Length: 360
Image (cartoon, rainbow, N blue to C red):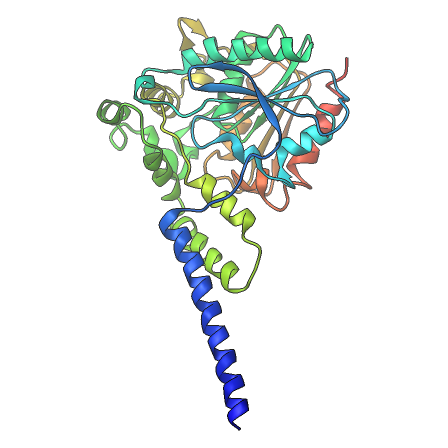
């Protein structure tokens, strides 16, 4: 009887220790933030300008296609979501398929960068990055792949600099901002609810925490409660945590938004919808989307609450490309890139589409 009680007591002690260890692990995440080793696909920096860096990724397979891919990310959040973890990396997948892959990382702006606007990014940074991609790869043409706002900037570039552009791929890219189709984001279209001048003049650069809070409040229960319910379930049920930690780290790692670019993004896109009207200009140059004639693939998510389907689909009627496709996945803004269905949905779709358009 004594021995049995001792055994039960030992088992209870182990269970209590296990509970304490799991509780401590969860509290560390809440207090210190998620820690994960992201962006592990081997790469080298081949060009820099101010805070921006152009990466070329090490091939994971023999190069099959002479046309390189230049990926352009948004000013919101960090681009390593495209290279999250080994086995869950879009970049890794493309290199394994034989593509020569580059990524333009805008970097983390400092206080001295508050006057950076889209004219600098589209007219100065992008053309120089493209020049370096072509020189490094030895190619005459390239594919431009833009994600979210990075896609919007890619569309601007494509309309102004079509000479060397072979293909254009847009992922969850907003170009149209109609108030009646904006859902919760319709608040951004009314200056009574959002005055970008006031924010930018107060902060200089808009802190990433403000942008993140605005996005999360569109689905507060899911983003603030559901995320951490999922964390505790994973911890106490001994489920793998690496992917959850990587995504949580990324979600909370938003860089500041350059003040001048923020003003333009809210006023001239959300509130005035100038791009689809043909009224948006960069240093006096009209950005005319009808000038886009290259093959285009635009991908959107049916569950995306950040870039709604009408915002992305509008581009199809504005461009002059004969070879164009609008492809919709049953996924959200980020889930279509990193979700469980990404390997069967987005990744092979882009791969298949590019394979026939990336030859010599």
